[in-house]
Picture 1 (cartoon, rainbow, N blue to C red):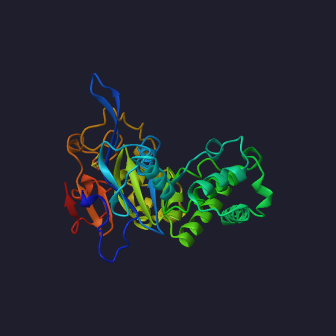
Picture 2: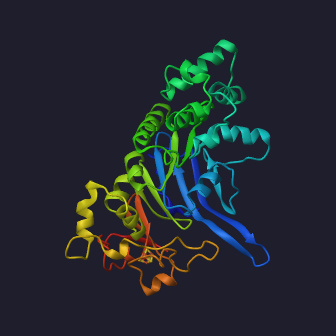
Picture 3: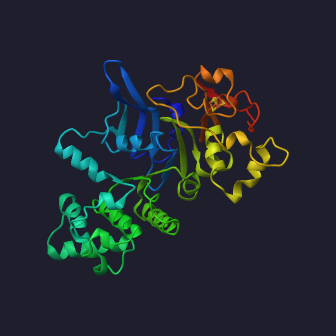
Length: 362
Ligand code: SF4
């Protein structure tokens, strides 16, 4: 395992329930030419009970591939997934069902993920019967009501016999979350699960998830392109670019003292009053506005032929000649905050941190 890619695992630290270790995923696209999509590259992540890691990046950065791999819906090309420290397996129906019970995924579009032909009652009854120990009609009825109450769909009788199309987007997403909770999972993987909702509803759903995480001690992965929302909701943030995790740390550290130029660009596109001081401090312009170069930073790279050296170099406003050919070093910014960028050891314009204590690993 590449220990530098995840925070140090000490005796005092809770044991992760789900862990990805150096996971690489490649999708073959042209076997004769030996071409494949380099979707995920040596990605490591630990999910701890009662904590949330946000996986942040733009579309096509590999976030969903990572989530699908953690859910064992995608086989890694190399690397491993550990559940409670043991290699996870989906070999055979029983192992698959057991894993799906413990690791649940909630998708972006609740309308697509809920069968429109079935009432809420059926949608929740099914996982309860498949994975639970329902003892009879009365017990089932009680569990259904309790599930809807847990996701704040009250009174439950108002929702139990509704079809998905009769519910609002937020209510549908609550049903999707209730369905995931029905099997009493240990891990919840949320793939852009609020991005299709109205802004006013997003906060309600994130608050609900935070309450469920705390009350039920769930380990959560929150996948999003919205770094501001991630700061609000997550304990740690992993920033992903072109299939690689380029920065990792506490939500506070990553958003308040971002170490990687890509994280800075993500933050620049998200207005946040708390960060105005940081932005003013790093600009090179006399009028205090962010550099123009950061306002338009081009398209994501082709992952069939990913850029050499640092994958971010074609878009990086601070790139140097060496960035085109050399892999960026892994730099430990603080105990629990690292990033991969040459500027952290050889600062230039825009690199603001003190590098005297940097711990570097190639
Ligand atoms: Fe930019 Fe070079 Fe750092 Fe990559 S290694 S983020 S190209 S400065």
